[in-house]
Image (cartoon, rainbow over all chains, first blue to last red; front, side, top):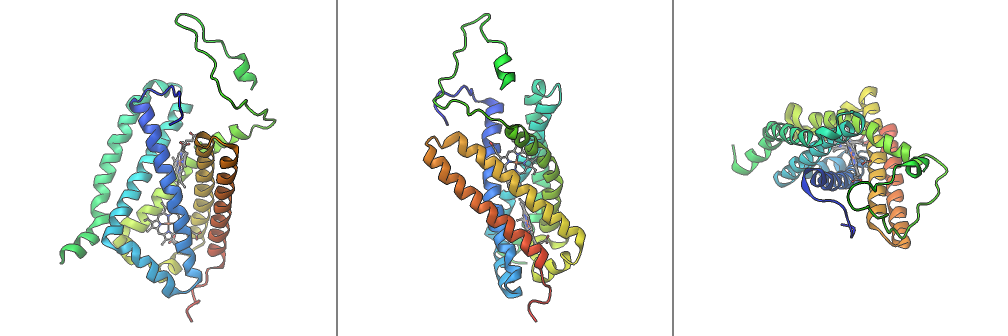
Length: 126
Length: 147
Ligand code: HEM
Ligand code: HEM
């Protein structure tokens, strides 16, 4: 963090740090992802072999993590837009942060089974 | 700039807030670039909510999710101009949004001019690679490449 900062922690600052970290993470993923998709121009086999990595159980957990990062960044991004454009936004920024976290928890719970069930089956048989 | 110069000085009441002792004097900008960049981050963000979350629902949730992805799956999707357009718009918006975000971050943390310069060269090079490759792949996709 730059020296002499005026930030004092709490929701406003931590959401900003998390927004930054998730943004960078998604950016690096996108770089890798456009390269892996480009393998469709090499051969069907090259593409299919690489996409197998996405189906590995450990990688699936990372995909769930990527979804966590994107959902946070997206919901918090909408909160930033509300703070900037809605006249009452700055007053309710803290409440909106907790609404974002609430929606995030619900969506992550809902996404767990569809994203992770195949990995679970593979690891524990059946 | 005018906005900042006209702003009321924060002096009333408590101790006056000193001006920041920043070494770097603001470059005189003749364009509104930063304003447009700021606006672009917000507009592209709103569109990306639909594009990226829609993409994730299709790729990870519906119909077996990631387990069904493969060359045949992509061939099926890119037979449809709607999904080609979707992917193309998502590619450009996400990449430009991400590049602009990283540009801000480099400006915040890289203090030496040399470091800033080279990090940005790296950043813009990577963006050109991603935009060029991604666009080319969508437009030149050939479902019969294996035959
Ligand atoms: C782990 C999660 C993801 C999976 C399994 C996945 C899968 C795929 C697949 C199969 C394609 C091929 C075309 C299609 O079916 O539409 C594709 C293309 C694409 N995806 Fe994803 N995706 C994921 C996450 C993301 C994220 C988070 C982003 C944006 C930040 C993204 C951006 C793109 C773009 C821009 C393309 C087009 C690539 C090109 O132009 O060559 N994807 N993705
Ligand atoms: C899913 C929808 C998204 C929304 C609603 C969204 C929204 C935003 C907003 C409002 C900002 C703040 C800009 C500012 O402070 O001026 C931002 C910053 C940023 N976003 Fe996104 N974004 C989204 C997707 C993405 C994607 C796909 C990437 C990566 C490719 C990304 C990477 C970044 C980065 C690196 C920053 C800079 C963070 C900082 O300066 O602290 N975002 N986003």
